[in-house]
Length: 361
Ligand code: SF4
Image (cartoon, rainbow, N blue to C red; front, side, top):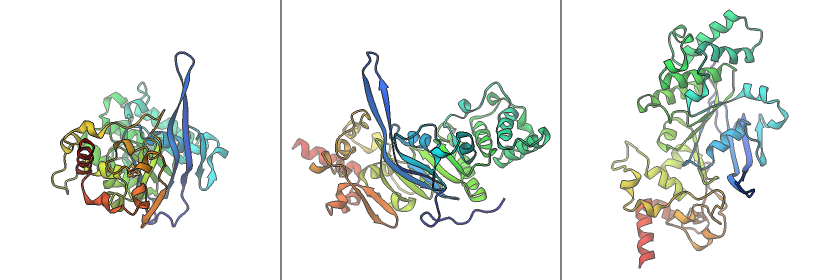
């Protein structure tokens, strides 16, 4: 196994890209009416060999829909998915999935429960290389299991999924994804259903795979702390839109969008004394409100109903993307108004409390 080159975003051609993709779903009602769910709007992301991009956001932010478009389980309503710079629509789905694999959140649902681990891996190996004999596939299955730290691999071949722990099942899912020799792994909350004690091990496994195999990885999570641990770059999604992105240390240490600031301040961080839960962080958690409906999202900046910094124009005009330096960007009017320093001047909770005091007075 050769070590991946030290890839740097921006200096290499992306293996996989989403270019300005939008996904709208038409939902039919019981009485023949219909509505449109605007799940993702004009999102772009590049995945490079040997690098991990984290997509962070609450549930309903559009991150899973984005991953499914990258995996070609959904075709974008507009925009394009490019593999090696070439539109993915020109590739047969079967050969596409030899390059791009998606790992789901629920490892139990991902494996066929009536078949042993051996069968689950064997099928993928046969798709990858039809010339392999049965004994070669068995040898390859053992090697795959050992690559994901299920050792000795032989001991796991005859187990059924229900005989494995959650962490072991997710390792088998990853081994099966690796069986086809992919260049891209898309992980949709791959650790969120696992026991807390083994999440770190799984993140270390993903990190090892990108270093040893040069895989390009997309790591989807609602947990900005785990993104900080494993990724190189972070993209933050809110209500179907990408609101901020850039190198992880930049984005997490100096959020340039109030929503990212909220995520960072309400996430556990051993380096930050006094990190609190959302309920503890906000005197009145209800003041924060809920994410908006994607059927009728707010006009202007979609975060404005919850944002303590919102101005009049935020309610009517969508903010443009502003580059803030070092590959770091954000979509927030504060940057256009020369008021960006307000984001770092106080905590989100204090800004929210201040806003509510002004409203009441
Ligand atoms: Fe808040 Fe306005 Fe920036 Fe949106 S554009 S995050 S509402 S300040």
